[in-house]
Amino acid sequence: MGFFSPLFQPPGAKAKRNRFIELVTTKNDPGHAALTRRKALALMSTTAAAAFVPAFDLDAAPLQYTLKPQRLTDGIWMIPGAQEAISQGNGGAIANVIIFDTSAGAVIVDTGPSRRYGEALAKLARDLTGKNIARVYLTHFHPDHVFGNQAFGADQIAAPKGVIDGLKVMGEGFADAMYRTAGDWMRGTELVLPGKAIETGVEDFGNRRIRSLTMRGHTSSDLVLFDELSGVLIGGDLAFLDRAPTTPNADIERWRISLANLGGIPHRLLVPGHGPAEDGTRAIQQTRDWLVAINEIISKAFERGLSMNEAMAEPLPKWTEKIALARYEYERSVTHLFPKLEADGLPRVDVETP
Ligand SMILES: [Zn+2]
Image (cartoon, rainbow, N blue to C red; front, side, top):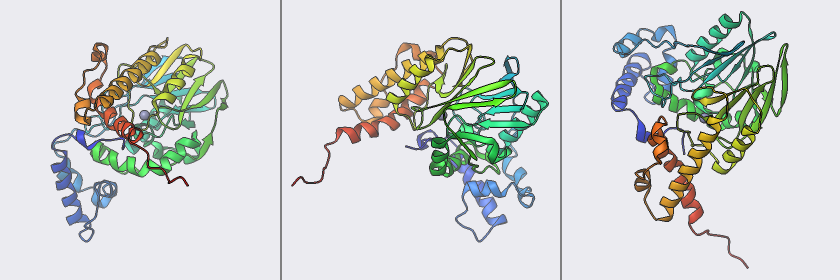
């Protein structure tokens, strides 16, 4: 039920990884046979290991994130994520990140996939606003949204308790998976837990008041944010647009309830976790339609007695052809939802009744 599925490792990644670990283990730490790729990349952030960089990545593109902020409205920018899966090509920069200018400083929503992304983001926020960072919010615990945390003070980072608890349990596993999938981009990245737990409420930043609403469904804890000054509503990964939703930690029923609640909040602009910001509620409707569709296809496949592989081959509705990663995320959703159906469908072995 991990966030990443080994089924979708890019070809060639393994050979390269092994060669890399060999380099580092033999030259840098010969006695440490159990060195993982993650530890190896973390080691490379030290100057002593810097000499290994050209030896390993001569053929790789320069690993610099180029953050291109889009102005949404006065004093609010979105750095759009690539409408792709996490890969060594995009460095995991697939989720939208938001920067607010407030009279109390810059307010950031989500920190991106890696330390290097977080550092670029912090610099960008200071450049755009001419101010220091006043607050960082995390919408949920998924790795493409939280591993830039290192660029900020833990006390600046606020998230619902459920997000913090989720990171405590799953954060290290997410970090390992990110190192495996995004590779060298992750160098030096470590998990940083938010220092401030928040619930539904408001926070004032001088001219802006930002409202926090805790929901769930995409994960066990999803934060929605609403800026009263602009009417901008940030849905996090409860809302996807033109990119198929991810379901590794989803509760589909709860998610649909949260989408209905999200749709009930009057707003001028809706920012999904992935996909373009728009006025209206297209992201909410499309996410709901997707969840209804895949839930039905997967449940019916299960009822017909299909195997997981057969279920993955089932046709998707025509309209999903326009959705990025539709087949890919549908297949992953089969691996997430099928085991739950199997657990529910098998006869229960209860304790003997007297
Ligand atoms: Zn997510």
